[in-house]
Amino acid sequence: MENNPYSYHLFLFPFQWDYIPGGKLKKDVDFETRTKLDICEQQFEPTLWKRNPFTIGEETDAHTDYNEFTFFYDFVRKSIFDYEDVHDENDRLRYFQYNRQNIGTYSITARAGDNPSTIYTLNIISISLHLYNTGVGILTYNLKNMDYPDPEAVLRINEFGRRIYPQFLGKNFTTETKNAFLPDKIEVDFKDGRDSSVETFSYFNDQTNLQRSSTKLPKHIMHLFDETLFTDQDKEDERILITNIMDDRMFTLCWYGNNQISRELKTNNSDLKNYAYAKSEWWYKYIFCDKDWPSCQNEYLLQDSLEAHTYARWASYGTYFGITRETFMLLTSDISQLTNFKAPPLYDHLRTIYFQIVVLCLISRSSLLRFSGEVARLGDLANHHKLSEKQFFKPIEK
Image (tube, rainbow, N blue to C red; front, side, top):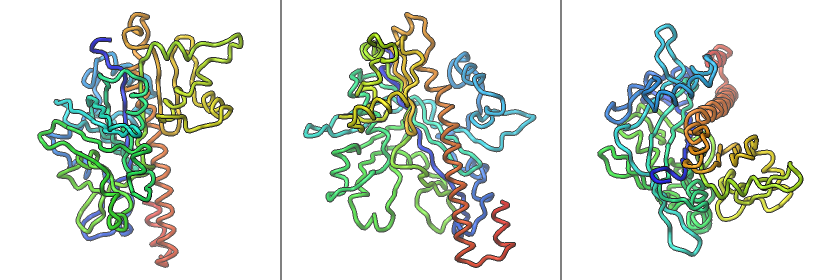
């Protein structure tokens, strides 16, 4: 496996955004004004961010781009590819790439129980941003692991690397969270001419901070929006307010190549339906982003969950897909063995075709949550501000 990665990791951060003119509150600005993509596009410094319309052969190899593009129906392409068409301007999506010339690093410092902290450093392949006219977006870290073949290391990279804020706080604030699954530190060197971004989650150790705002996006996300109107802090100035729309973790895609585990999971007894993956604690931990032990401690429920969340069509080839509401995971043989068997480059498909499927799902889910929030907001305006019929129906129409 010389020069081949052991695994790929993609962390996707779905969020909501609102453009709010200076001196106004969000409730005073209609939905159409708050979701103008042109204003977003004007924010990005060309030396750091570049709008990157889809062109076959520009992103990766021509054949890889072709496979990704032709996989989807034409009407679906306009929702995931920002491509230039003189006959049909795409007004629903803008796609950007960050600092494509230089490859940086994404370092995760994680506690190992009573042991000293361990650092996992992954190479950044790309950082991308989808912005939609529904007022939602997806920021994606596309990473590769060149140094950690151990299965437990892959589990820990996924569990710790996806976190954006503490899921809970203990008596000692983040101490208990870091003993569970919050990283000690995430440090990202963007190779963009600026200092590395270091997030230690110390904000959540100060009660005064929590009283002011209980949520705060991490520095390795907000660093990417420096020198723009994008902010996670509401204020009176002109701004594009970013709000987390789901929970404390990013959606995770992962491909991992391991010959031994791939073989072990396909073993079966005389009952052809009884593959080993259906009882594998490691497979459960992998697809549900656990690390030390499975988050299901009932062997019957564990098997039911694995059968429900595993796509095992290619089990005899040692290829398994695991899909949950927070993950899309793929396990195969390593790249060398896949190449020897003349197998499809599934590790590339994960970062292209399957990635786009996940983007579609996340945008659909995020947009529905966004619209639900808008309905609740309008209902609140009507009930508390005694709007006239005209005042009420105009924002609904927008």
